[in-house]
Amino acid sequence: MTTLLEFKQVSKQYGADTRALSNVNFTVKQGEFVSIIGPSGAGKSTLLRCINRMIDASGGEIMFEDSNIMGLNKRGLKQLRSQIGMVFQHYNLVDRLSVIENVLHGRLGYKSTLEGVLGLYSKEEKRRAYTILKTLGLEEQIYKRCDQLSGGQKQRVGIARALVQDPKMLLCDEPIASLDPNASIIIMNHLRDICTTMGITVIVNLHQVEVALKYSDRILGVNKGSVIYDGPPAGIKREQLTRIYGSEIEEHIGELEKQHAG
View 1 (cartoon, one colour):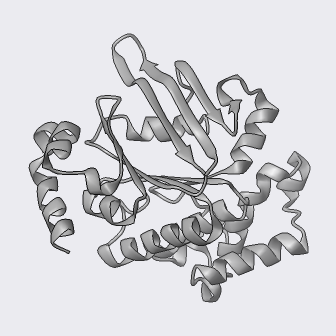
View 2 (cartoon, helix red, strand yellow; view 1 turned 180 degrees about the vertical axis):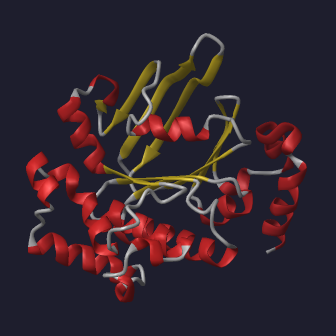
């Protein structure tokens, strides 16, 4: 498998006192499903957002398809972001617009400013958006306003918007944190299917260890801005969880035991 993403000695400093990432090194292969776990404030979200430069790293190199994204100009950054779809915890949809209109916003990276303002989309782009929504079980909601949808439906719209970009990678920042258990399962199943059937690399931040163990090819355990664990779900035992979570360990041990029992 080809290496799609590589972090080399990546750090992120906020002000004089806060070091969010410290000499982070890892690689991600094309078509991998990678989960990032760790306690609140560990640097998971910062790490994820450095990949598409929603946050600029302070040092090191971030290679995407052999190109160092740290040096990209505005045009290069627009091109990069068209290759990397983003799924947010709180959806980031325009509530007053319809489902299909929100999804088509995923094509804005390919448009001129004028085309974007006027909402000029080709028949092929609309057909593609419809096909993706149908795959995600939203064909009956296509013309509904997004403020009429449930949380789980909104998140599926967010995934569709990312997929219509034709990305090589999906970044998902706590995509199930605001959802009930049933909606969470639906979202994670869709993300796993996208990775398996479309060959799209998925990197997801998760608070739930049990979910990470169930769906991932690989897990990155992060604590205090450093990668403490990088390996398969089967390698996560009590000892690794203790190193990743420290004092928060007890709430996650039950999830580990439940997963091994299952």
